[in-house]
Length: 228
Image (cartoon, rainbow, N blue to C red; front, top):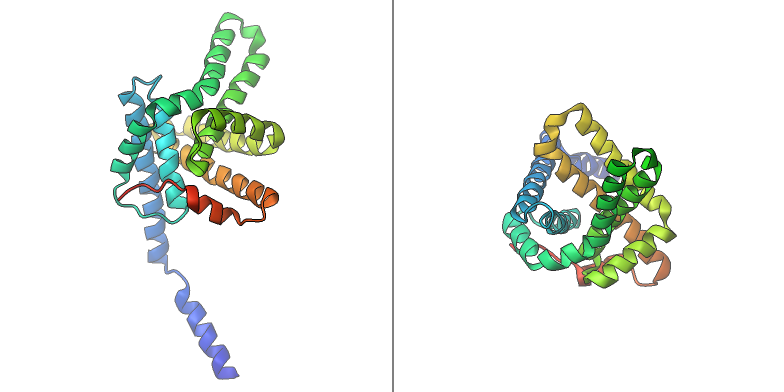
């Protein structure tokens, strides 16, 4: 009995990651976030900013989801380019309501600064919708109309989830405000990855609550894995 216990203890200790392994994991994660950041900026500029940011965010979200679900790291740039190209029109349609809300809020604030509470609320709704619609498109492989509708329904049914996402984005924005140099190298990638991780956890909990089928099984059937 004592020998068995000792064996299990030795095995458990052997399975612990070493400091070097932890450092490698951290460096790998930072490199991935930096890559996402560069891809979002590149994809946004490639589409003329206004039309480029939606497919860039959607493609980056798809890469982030694949990584969170254990996907490989090879061919990520090619996968991003492929998804950006294939989803260019669909992504812009999916994000149209959120983009419109943000633009109207900005125009309203410029025209009447005293109306900032209403403008802020409208912009917040637009940001929340855009972040969730990107995650839903990647997770459930939805076309524009169902994605738009389901994102609004999700926001109305689970306002707390949207609040958590907005708080996470606010946290990234606050850190970037303190260290502006993070914006061109890390902040956008970190925001996309963080929102994707939060959204996937919300979707998994919701799927488990409404369906007897494990959420993981459903997700695997619709996963858009980046090609190698």
